[in-house]
Structures are given as C-alpha cells and as structure tokens.
Length: 201
Image (tube, rainbow, N blue to C red; front, top):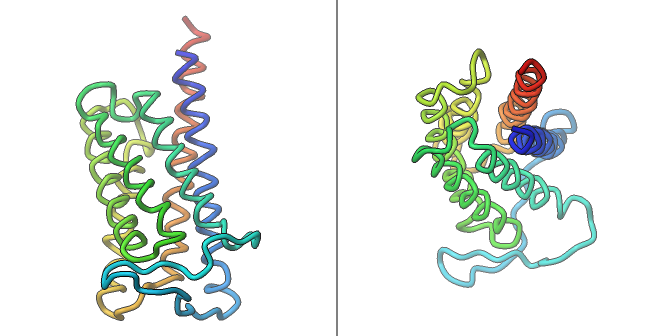
C-alpha cells in the first residue's frame, strides 16, 4: 500500500511538472506575441530532420526533454502503482504511454518524425489508458475522467488546427498543460485517499 502511495505521489509531481513545461512553452505565444520559428537543422532523409544544435546549456533547449522525461516517469509511476488501470491486462496501456513518451523525448534532437509521432502516440496511449480507467473503476469522481481528457485534447484541439493551417499550433500545444496538470492533481489526490484508507484499517 505504501508502495502505491509513493508512486502515485511521484506521478502527481511529475505530471504537474510536465504541465508547467507546457505552460512555459505556451506563455510567449499567449502573452508576448511570439511567432513559431522555423527549425534550424538538416534533412538526413526525406522523413528525418535533425536539429543543428544537439547540445546547449540554454534552459530553453532542455524545457522539452525535461518535461517529457517527467511525462515518462509519471507513466512509469502509475504502471508501478497499478493505477488507474489495475494490475491486469489493461496495465499494458501505461507501458505504451512510456514508449510514447520515449518517442516524444527524441523530438528534442530529431523533430521529424518524433515531434508529431510522439504527440500522436501520447494522445493515443492516454485515450487507451482513459478507457481502461473507466472500465477498472479504481479512480472515482472527476479523477476517473482525466486520463481520457489528456488523450482527447490533441485530437480535439491540436491536430485539427495542424490539418487546417498546415503548421503546428504552438499556442494550443501550450494549453495541453492543463490536462497534464489535472492528471497530476488526480494522482496526488488518489495517494491521499489511499493514505486515509490505510490509517483507518
């Protein structure tokens, strides 16, 4: 039980940090009139675009990788806790979420194909986790819907704008912060619920 509580707390912290990363990304586009700049790099293959700068000490360079690493740790922590999917076959969707975060992590150095592929796979994996959460019925109240909200967001808001405009919508991508942060809060609150249940036994 303590094992699950600690992993849920870790997931909560990591998903909130993921959300903060998206907030920092979106802020210049919301309030400072920033424009999305063309990537500086080279096409190694027609489908493989590599950034020119592969390492930098600039904080902005590490914003994406650190946020996505937190996303991976969050999924791993939920997988270890067996929540919100349970420890049965549905747990495999959390493993898919880890793989998706791993693909997304590579986008810091290889934007194509890993940025769109990582976002797509994270959306798909969280949709599947969301459906599994509803079926497992471990999380209750508003918390049980949050994984589904995280998974639906890119398909309802990000990808349609990408298709319509032909360019990534950075301001909308930044708004993905709020579902991720809500997932973090849900995981943390679930850890508190288990703590209370444990003390009452």
